[in-house]
Image 1 (spheres, rainbow, N blue to C red):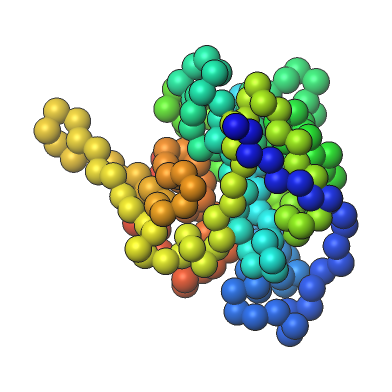
Image 2: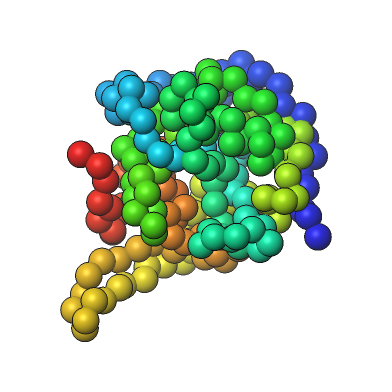
Length: 229
């Protein structure tokens, strides 16, 4: 059964940091400006380059608390990513002006959301997926979930769910998988547990990198991610 979240998107004025609690400050105007500043150089660079794919790392608020919005890709899809937990995204089209356009277009196709570019905070360095294809993470704040109308495409999306930032920051909800090659340790990847679906693979890596950006000092990455120089 398709799990659909029915809400209406509306533009929201920035919330002054003085009126927010410690958790809600992760999506405050001040934290957004700090993150935009940190992402400025990589955003300018990767908007000029033709990266083969992009995803929208979708931040939102649920009852006022910051959260990540995820999709579960349909099991009826072909390819290695069917049934995966993911962020909206996909391959670049020739008509896409840049990676931000790719991420916004794919989000529209998958979730029926017509988002404006001003919701985008920036672009992180592209990261290879399991097929070695470079994927550009585009970070955006969708706003309050209660103000969104999501219309998931059933051919692509099986479920939509959120995990709050406090949940993701709790160590009991964090796990790691160690990989070996020919009996020798090779690398470690994160996993986020105890939600509706396990978050792993590239989506977990992007979640981890975004948590590190959002909550410096609160989240400490224990993995090493190979990114494009």
